[in-house]
Length: 373
Image (cartoon, rainbow, N blue to C red; front, side, top):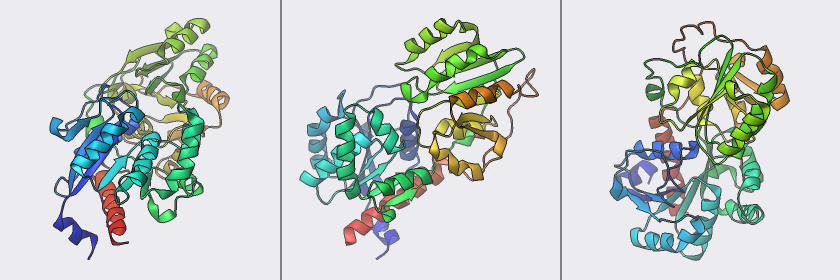
């Protein structure tokens, strides 16, 4: 009996876990997955640690289970109760700390349940910067090899998961989706006025994103401006750094925007000084908008992109010092006086429906193999 025959027999009940409606890339990818999921094959529930955050979605309220907890570990008792009630066959997790607790719950209460995770970042680096890092890393190393399936967004991430003891057949490389129809629906691009280099950043204002190390290098660069789109705990610290270096005229904060694409399309370059990432959605979206990207080689997942784009469209710098030396040499776009939406710079990407299909097939494959073993 093949997988397709099993699909016709019964819909899979699946829990898809998220901590909140924060506007991060992992949350956006997960919401996109749900919105494009084949409902004839899956009876899904979005299980939320809490429902805080600005991210919007088209998911029916009856399909959202709110555990209403500030910390995931405080929600575990309620989660176990909900699992007993709804009896999901599969739980899909997107954050390592949630995945670890799920694997512990499975071992104690639900040994036949299938656990599949999507890794949002490179585990070795991101786990160093999580709360209770030592304990989480120990638990990750102990329990992750027992996971049923893992989705990696890049070859580098897969290689790291293999080193963690996860066998190759449990890992699928599925790159993040791009909704080109939505992001390229830009009536008029926005570019900060005047001659000179115009950069844009989109993302959460947190330590991971590295803006604290980008901002100081702007002091010694003339005729430059960066538009920062996003909110986060680091904003007040970033404002102090800007004040210290007296470069208020070189930086604009626009806060969180549901649709930042006109600003990305209008910039000369998108800049991402992150200390670590998985496969950043903002890089894929920027390239789809025709805006080249400046970032660092610390984002290992971007190595896979080199085969889909031209060399000068993705500028990978060794470190922040190298980034500063590069930025000094760059010029504004040729049409800076009257900028227009440029052609996409990326090929061979996953659409949202293609991504959802690939993930769905992987989930069904892993579940069916577990069922027959």
